[in-house]
Length: 196
Ligand SMILES: [Zn+2]
Image (cartoon, rainbow, N blue to C red; front, side, top):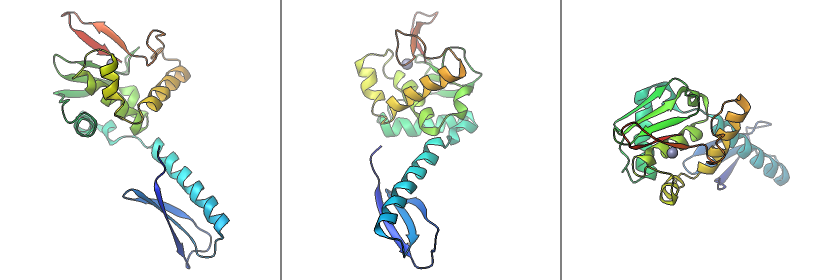
């Protein structure tokens, strides 16, 4: 991730405590007035690291219901796909053996494995962007990935999911022919559906 802009505020009332929070695009770091430059440098780096760590663990509000999931899909479509991907239905489904999610473009529906309820918000967002993109592009060709990679943390999320699958002993994403763990299957009606 790009380094955020940092604003350091020195407070006479602070003796030892340091804190940090986001204010728009800026991270504000509050430090005691008497800290040295070296201490300031150390604590700014440390607080940025902590902030990043807690944010990258935070789970998505979309985990709570199908309605919240659909809402998140709309936000992501607007932000990364020019609002062109419009799903009709998005729902949580019981864990699937070999998939994280699936999309049926003809019905414009997306199903998401319950296993993703516990992953960090940015990982779930990647899966949703991936499935939303299938509403526009069925396969996994270059034009598909060009759209998916508009989501800046796509590569990191793919790595996260591979690691999760391996650690849990799930057979998701283990298909050697498909490094990102996605499979295309031909549905009964002869249409290509994506199972990820
Ligand atoms: Zn896919």
